[in-house]
Length: 298
Image (cartoon, rainbow, N blue to C red; front, top):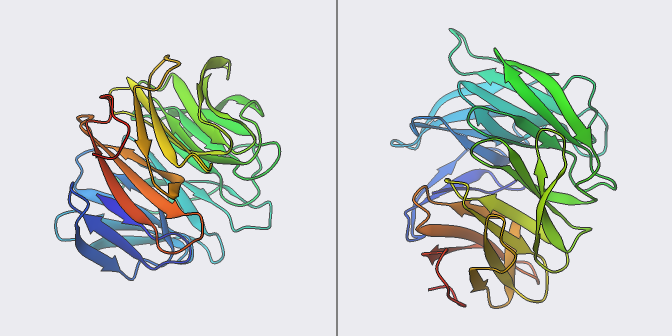
């Protein structure tokens, strides 16, 4: 597992599947968004205060390469389709955000900005993607939040559905492995919303309570894990298309951090980054058999 420290940190923590720290990779300035290569050999990290995307060897835990962006572009979120890493970039407080592209198979890989077409973002958009596309870019935090869907054609983004149906204050977005559905956690809602990537029509709702801030779909697309910044202090796991959680995970006095959920590829573990309401350092919890009924972390 790789856990980034965010814009105010300068490292990536490596843990085993039990949550034990095995390594801290330092010198990764503001590492935030992470994406793995198809073979798992390379971890890409967006350095939000380092104006670069770094490529890290997942065995040696050392940098293979670092791909710079122009000064004050704040690359923050990442998603990957095939050989292309898509980068949500843009510093807070201005409308110069966009999507960049890194072609990892190029003879001399480099980042090309401005791939978002006519879309405009205040700061860095949240980007998510399925292996074969589409790429989804959502405006975080604002009211209303715009979501743009793009197909990928020979390394070029082609604009598709666009709209504000995701609500306001979006905190997290994910796409199903087959690319047909996106899920959003928007703070203005009391549920995680499912939307068709083709036209942003509704594809279900998963009740979380107020201020959902985390969502992640399992590797087989069969389950949706959700978190919310509520007094309930829990993570709920739903079967895709279901209405009742198959698993409720109690988090004591913590909540799932924004974007703080990840599944193992075999669905046997759900990783939850938690944050105390009063602040302090985040923690990592590991939920075993998350699709089986249980009401505590076990």
